[in-house]
Amino acid sequence: MRYRLLLTAMFVTVSAHAYGEDADRIVLSDQVRERCLKVLRVGMRGEEFWPSIHAAEGLTLAGHGAEVIEFLTPKLATDKDDQHRCGIARELVRAGDRAKADIMLKILSSDDPHGHVHAAESLYKVVEIGDGKALRKAFEQDQNIPQKLMAAGALGRCGNPQAMSYLRESLNHDDPNVLRIAVWILGRIGDSSDVPLLKKQLPRCQEDLLKAYVNHSLATLGDDEGLAALAANLKDEDGAVRTYAATFAGDARALSLADSLVDLLDDEHPDAAYRAAQSLLMLAGPPPQEVTEDISQIVYRATPKNPRYTEGSIVALGNGDLLFAVTEFQDGGSDFAKAHIVARRSSDGGRTWGEKKVLQENTGGMNVMSVTLRRLPDGSIGLFYLQKNSHDDLKMFVRHSTDEAETFRDPIPVTTDDGYHVINNDRITVLSSGRLLAPAASTPDVQKVNHFVCRCYLSDDNGHTWRKGTGEVDAPKRGAMEPEVAELKDGRLLMLVRNQLGFVGKSYSEDGGETWSKMTSLGVQGPEAPATLRRIPSTGDLLLIWNNTYTKNAGHGGRRTPLTAAISRDEGNSWTIVNNLEANPQRTYSYTSLTFVGHRAVMSYWESGPGKGQYSCRFRSLPVAWFYSK
Image (cartoon, rainbow, N blue to C red; front, side):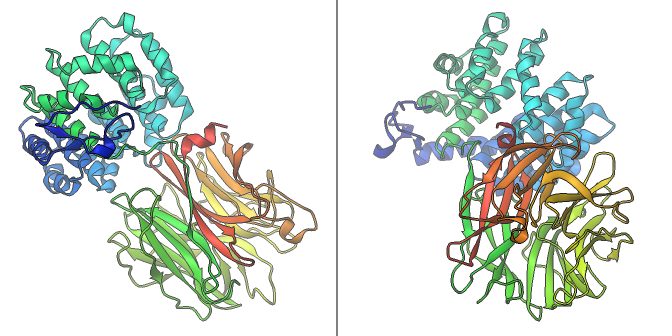
């Protein structure tokens, strides 16, 4: 949407390059900016709880999250009302303390229903759903419809197509409150196809406030009539209507309404003033990034000195930054060349990256490689890596960080027995019980024996001590290699296995990874290459990423291209191919890492090139909805 900005010399100034049809923001004078901040700072310290929380939101959106965290953190320790705690936790998350999402998730899962709706609403607002279990359960019930709607908003925002369908169906509900909630959510997470659906509701809106909700949502979706109604509502005699209009003006990027928002800074209805200040500061900032954006770039590019950057892992830090670690090989590209683990940080979702730093020095006789960064049950971050001393001595270690990966404690051995134990990058599994699994493929000597069997190493104390599971998985030829483990809804574990038989192998455990069934086929073809398996939080479906190809008698069963995604809605019994993530036949792609951050699937994988024998590491971030749109 593009709007012509009306100039007011006294209050709002617009630089020459931003004026006109292509304007994407307003430029506030220092006087107005300070006035907005003063309104919000006074409001955050006000006596009325929810307006004060709204003022805190405005301060965060204006870039003053640290101030909000300092003010609200003590209140979280003293306020015992679950609804209030959801509001405080929500704004702490928005301000950068993302660990506080656990408070909302625990309230949503509690037996006391008092805070359930607020928890689902707050999680929706800050795009946090955890593992999705609590919100999926809230969405599946029908006793509390507002809770179901808010859960649908949170899940739909993070890519659940069934949740979006439910929200659209709810527009036809007889209850005006159900209509209001559905309209409010769709205005923010819907698309242009929702405009005619929303317009159909206007004739049956008997209350001015409900009509305002519909029109404001229409405005955010780009409808001119909705924008005109929003503009009129900024001057409505009802303070609640003015408040919601001021809120949606920012969401709609209604640059043309800046003057009216300035007028509202003196509104007798405090919440209207807070929302006006918030929207002015939002409109003075850059437009939000498109939720459908495909972020894809080589973050670690191979060079003659460092010909191989492979086996990456990514973790979301507590302030929302992404930490992307990878193995950096030096002067050679073989698995036995010298290497250490380096990392870079992004504060904008992976669009730009900071300077590279060494995360783990080479403490091995040959190298350290194959990193996993994992958020552990106690909230710490585990840095898992392989230390390679020789062809018969490869072990995994873990180091813990309690300061968001700024420092790490001394290494703890994960594999304590002799041998050559391969554990791929990004492979540590955290079970719902809190147990950690390190799925390993082991051989006594990779040069002399080179036949692998799979098993798991287990920890029940957050990774401080480990033991070897009693069972193992084997396969013909070179054996069972590079396992991946995911937990199924019925409590069993599913292991995927690389092999030389032309398919992705699978095995099951019914005892938490202690023992495993005989390997059979997952039902999809595959070369001798690893496959990655994760559960999508917003839908509960399994997502498989692997090389969907096989050429009999070719080396490794064929080239590692394309890199393909498939969905299973029945716990891995059948698979629906979504699309190829990469399909250039001149390149190869493998060793995928995968995590979910908000509404996005965040990945890394190596890509061959730019030179012969070189491998670079790509960052890829896609909206979860991408996997359901093909």
